[in-house]
Image 1 (spheres, each protein chain N blue to C red):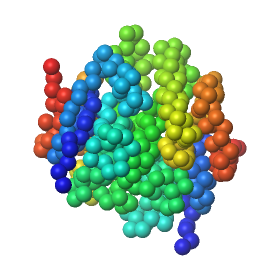
Image 2: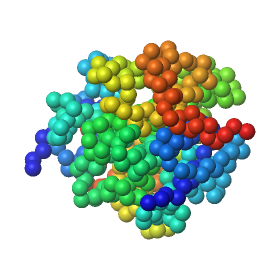
Image 3: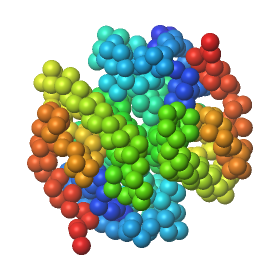
Image 4: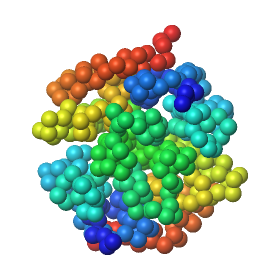
Length: 224
Length: 224
């Protein structure tokens, strides 16, 4: 069965990259619509209708059967989008595990660790270091330190997995847990932290960077 | 088939309440072990072996078939635990939707909105208002305002759903999206915000509070 392209509303941010990278890795067709977050386009009425939270990325999948809207399934939140894409389009489980398996839920655990700690905390570090109009040393220190702690947790996970011969966050393959982290690891240099400060994470990052589709996904949307 | 009790490592926090409330609502047997986070017990070696991130809640389900460890399936991150419990123990879909349905993924979207925005941002508000050893007005304002914005998004979701005759976050029943939010809504008063400032959310909160099991779940672990 041939699929219609998935619609992707995105911007060149860590959360945007997560989805474009994973779409490329899965080899799915998609049409990109750039949302200019510098102009608050994601807070405009037409977009908030798609995502009440007014943030990219959002997808619309016209291939979804019995979709609740005419356009298809409208979905936001990177954690939900990644899990949906894996469940739906990775039937051979190259980058996922069967629903209900222990690995399925460990993948979900680390996916949610990424979206609930790594992303939000590194996002706050970005805010206080790059964007805040006021210098707030307390905020810079708090979120820089916690960002580093969190990458330390990932290093610990990779270290445990290495004992079982794995270089992945879960089991013997890259999953959405890895792709979610990759988007933020890719932008870690912006706050002068080098992912290679953690040896296993550094290797993980370099190897994942070479996976077919990853480089192309990082160019979405193309820079002006 | 009779089930062995699930082991729950928890503390009286919004994230802890999410799980004890949902276990009660599902009518599942569980044994509670209190983790004293004021003594950093969740950072002790034995606990970090269970959850590399060193945070409550964590569950161990001895009923899981082909579990990767002798004790059973070890799972952390409230989003993952709630989804696992719903997938596994709510076969009649009283508080969930069938895997693969549009409602399943909308539930996941709002569950992840809770764990990736509502929880982290309200958590930072708690930090700057209650726990920080330094007064940092920038932090207080930033996270108070964003917490309020996020509850406004929830009010908007409930307002749209009301047009379809629903008082729930997704469809015609309480799901893990609701139970996840409830844990944090319950503790909103600690930073002097009244959930009833948002009329639909206030009703949602009062009605969910009366659901059998909720009150009991909020007493776990019992106060000293």
